[in-house]
Amino acid sequence: MTRLLALVIALFLAFLSGPRAQALEVGVFRAEVTPPIGSPLCGGSVLPAQVIGTPLWARGVVLRASDQPPVVLCAVDWVGIANGSHDAWRAALAQAADTTPDRVAVQTLHQHDAPFADTSTEALLAAAGLPRHTFNPDFAQEAMDGVAAAVADAAAATAPLTHLSYGKAKVEKFASNRRLIGEDGKIAGTRWTACKDPELRAAPEGVVDPWVRVVGLWDDNELLTTLSWYATHPQSFYNSGNVNYDTVGMARAIFEAETGVATAIHFNGAGGNISAGKYNDGAPENRPVLAQRLADGMSAAWADAVKQAVGDGDLEWTVARVALPVRADVELTTELARVADPELPAGERARAARDAAWLQRMAGGHQTPLSKLTLGPVDILNLPGELFIEYQLAAQAMAPDRFQCTAAYGDYGPGYICTEVAYAQGGYEPQKYTSRTAPSVEGVLLSALQRLVE
Image 1 (cartoon, one colour):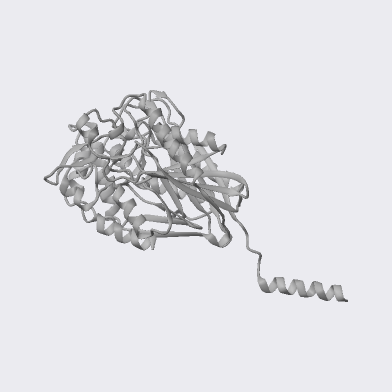
Image 2 (cartoon, rainbow, N blue to C red; image 1 turned 180 degrees about the vertical axis):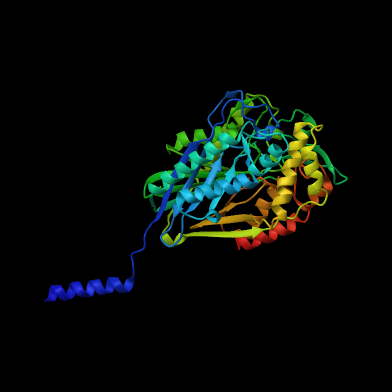
């Protein structure tokens, strides 16, 4: 009778306490997204694919807590995924992970000898008799389907996520601000990815975020994957027809071998106005040098990492949606006429189509999502466009006590997202056809970041 009573009491207490909390879970995925020979690269602005130097990858994680739908983070070795294509990727990966699109972040690393995808722009160009100029839609669909299949496999084979580690270190002699401002407050020079001008290269680094941040995900003492973030244009040289994952892919591979992890994942930060120009004259032999500098930073961050336990309640996903203001000097009817004009060069028609696609998207009431994944002491921001570094630094200042990581190059539709002052300074980034947002975007976006971060 005593044993029976004890059993009844134990069952009753278990009932009162509710279901036992589950551990966090993580699935790691990667899928090859290398284009076939002949495919357009960089939206058709460089030579098409002539040789495959390295494979390109989509890599990421599926994260699951017991009381909420899964979260998917995905980093793709492409120059950009924009508008309708970005929506399609998020929807496909969401379906594969049994979650919703607003809990999926798809970012690119922005290598230039790599594909671009934008079904919205393609539809306008195809209707005007200029199909497949910016990308290969058949391959893009196959690539997205392959990544979705990899996500489904990862979601079905998760491992417990019991600990995470996090650390950061400075990367020496890589990132430099490419916008050099003269005494008159205007652009005096642009320090491109490859810069041969000794005067421009001698100028200070300027405003950068020199830190690479690295997070490790663990099942007790088993390392499951690493995630890293660094803000810069990644290419050392390009327009070669040689498809490759460039400096960031090389650094990722070095770090992957060093840690022994099967899949290392890397994200590009807000590198819209950042390049390697101060330290790179475009010589091919500089590519592995720059890659090693980033890899050395990753290694130092890894050595500096702090490891701590995480539990089921340590995952939180937050979304802030924002209507990005459209610049005043573009008009839909005009851009559609340029798309349809057979007398214009194909490149000009493609630029007009990108602007028209964005105008149509915004006129339809589209709001761009910004998202934040909180994982214990770590915040991971997932942001749109070719974002200026000042936004990344501003977000860090909003939460100085958090270990904050920023991935930009989400929806590539808006192009460059500059600071307000940059539009008055001039230069390449805030021009028509490169930036589709108005100067007021700074106030709008900072307000959205404030809501997201705090």
